[in-house]
Structure formats: structure tokens, C-alpha cells
Length: 350
Ligand code: ATP
Ligand code: MG
Ligand code: MG
Image (cartoon, rainbow, N blue to C red; front, side, top):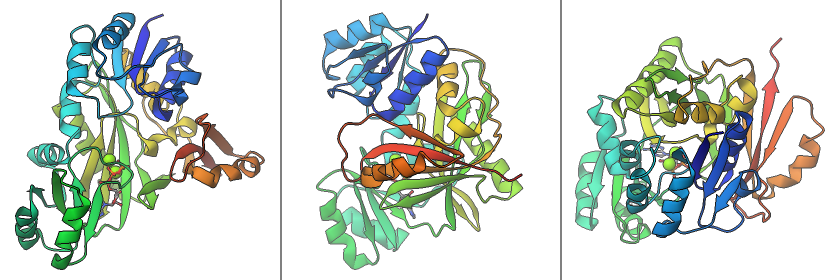
């Protein structure tokens, strides 16, 4: 069968590999770290750095299409790969989403609402931004942040110096603090033919900066639901996107505000594994392989809960519960804050 190359061997690469195998594809993982979770299920693994040109060329030559499970792939590596094989989703989606300043500028350019933001280069620009944006606010590194890392909250202008020191010299943006009632995300997909399909929005609860639960259906009015679908399609079409994307949204009385986009399958889409005929992983594989998309329809109410660090101790009890589907990532070492697995609880309403 055709070979799908996946950059990144974490749990997302693992679940993409499983989905690809179910459709008869061969998978080849590229991952610098040893013993990646995806390596246990993929057909082939290359362990090499993203600076290793020879390894990248050999990887590209062995696959039909390149996709990825994370957005911080070095530009030079993408240049090398793209000379040989298509990269899906494409480069523009990566360029836009790798940097919060580029990302928010792009979203505003589409006419979408984001938190007011400003580019921060030094303490003076931070003080000036506080003057216009006000407090409370959040200072975030432009690049490489995840699970709330690389962020500092400012309750008042006096917090400027400490927050700036927290960035350790990294380029940053200041964002106004959004008074949201709750957070939702929409997992959307676009096929090679331009067809768009969205999963039902999920409602997300975070704990200590890390996603804790996603619940479907989310609390949204019919018009908010329509808004979420339309704005996601707007983003995907603007990027000529191919694959699955996660779009994080804040729900406010004034409407939906886009927080960030992830050009890949997304933790808040894991509920689809047990709530839809075609889940986000199969959907992504279908898109990058040029297949028709699944329709995204949901057949059950679901609560997805992440198993972080010592939450793994709950697995024996969870495994005795009915209507609970357990998904573990095969990570040998339990660490605090580490995503070890998740479970989907089907909520039967009739
Ligand atoms: P992820 O792990 O989702 O990639 P991240 O580290 O990229 O997270 P964000 O999603 O930007 O960070 O922020 C993490 C959380 O912090 C958000 O889900 C939200 O709860 C809160 N947050 C972020 N920005 C704002 C804001 N402008 N106003 C209010 N809350 C915010
Ligand atoms: Mg993020
Ligand atoms: Mg986020």
C-alpha cells in the first residue's frame, strides 16, 4: 500500500499510525527521540535529528506523502522534504501557526475576533502595550509554548517586570485577558478536493494549563455552533488546507473569540474515537491520502478525560466500568504533567 510519513512519534503520531494501518496504509515515523510511543505501532521508524539531511532525504524517498503531529518542525527540514514529496497540511499552515504573532495577525486579517494583542520586544514595548491593552493580560512567548508553558499573567501594570523576566528574552506577545464563560474547540477537516467537514464542537476544561476534559455536546446556541463551523471553514479555505485542524475558541457574551489554531489532530478531538464513525485520526489520514472525508457526524454524547502522570493509577478501576473506552500511549515512564493516555466515557441519553 501507499506509505504515509509522519513527523513526530508521540501519542498523536501513534494514533495516526493506527488509523492509517486500519485503512491499509504503511506508516513511517520520523522522530529524534528514542523509543517513541508511535514506534510501537508504526511499520517503520527513523530515529534521527531534523538537522540530518541524509536521514530526511531517505525518509522522503520512502514515503508517498509527509504529514506531522506537531507544528514546530524546523523550516530547513521542511524545505528538504518538500523537494521530494508533498507535505500535508501545507507550509503556509505551519508558518502561520508556529508563531502567535503571525497567527493572530492572520486570524484578524480574515475578519475573525481575537483577544487584543501587541508585539513585545523589550520592557518598554511591554509597558506601552499595557497602556493600550490594559490589565489583566497574559504575556506569551511567540513560539514553542504548549500546555500553558511560556506564559505569565499580569494582574496589574506592576507585574510587568516580573512577567517580562519570565520570558527569558524570548520574543513575546501581550494578550488582553478574555472574560470567557467557557472554552470550546472545533476540529475541522479539509480534503484535497476542498471539501470541508467539521466535528461537533467540544467544551474544554483545563487544569494547571493542561486539557483535563472535553465534553460533547458543548454548551453553545445554534447560532454560536454555526459561527464555529463557518469560522473554521474560513480558516481552512484561506490556507488551502489539507488535513485536520484544531481551532480553540473562547465563548463570550459578545460571541466567539479565536484563541489559537493547531495544524494537526488535537487532544480535544480524542472524543471522536468513540463518538463518530470516522474519528479525527482517520479523517486526517483520509485527507492527506486524497480520500473523501467522513461526514463528522456524532452518534453519542462523550466525555473525554486525559490521564496525566499518576492518573494512570485509575486505569484498573476504569477498566471495570461499562461505557468507558481506554486509550493508552505505551509510555514507559510516568512523569508529573505527562500525558499517559485518555478515556472516553459514552453518556447514554436514552
Ligand atoms: P495548548 O496546550 O492548548 O497548545 P498553549 O500553551 O498554546 O496551550 P493557550 O491555549 O494560548 O496556550 O492558553 C492556555 C489556556 O490559558 C487557554 O486554554 C485559556 O484557558 C487560558 N488563556 C490563554 N489566553 C487567554 C486569554 N487571552 N484570556 C483568558 N484566558 C486565556
Ligand atoms: Mg497551543
Ligand atoms: Mg491552547
